[in-house]
Length: 158
Image 1: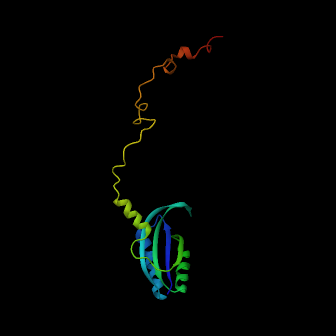
Image 2: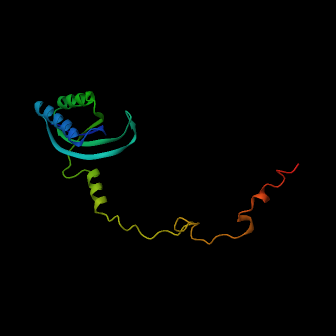
């Protein structure tokens, strides 16, 4: 039987349990038609590159499927009718990879990396932030505050 990878995006206001329920429904449909889900990964709630049906985030789920083409066609039809599913992408593949996908592998690397120390601060134009960047106050005459009388020259005289 052919092998497929199916990625589905669901609305951000559904829960992870509801996303799992959608995947369970897909698995039941495939079992009825002689197929099986070999791999199942929940990638989490992730930001979208652009809004889809007024959603800025979506739950991502990857399914590795071994099923006849007719069964996969029925799954795509059901996902297209489901109101919580925003998008699906189904690809025919030569083999379903064992182990975590690239998305989950990258997430694991990010967690292993120490995020505490980010190196020394680069020297910049501004010092520590507040108070003029650590420089002393400029006492030149053009920067000092002037009395109001000097600023209103010629305003009151006629």
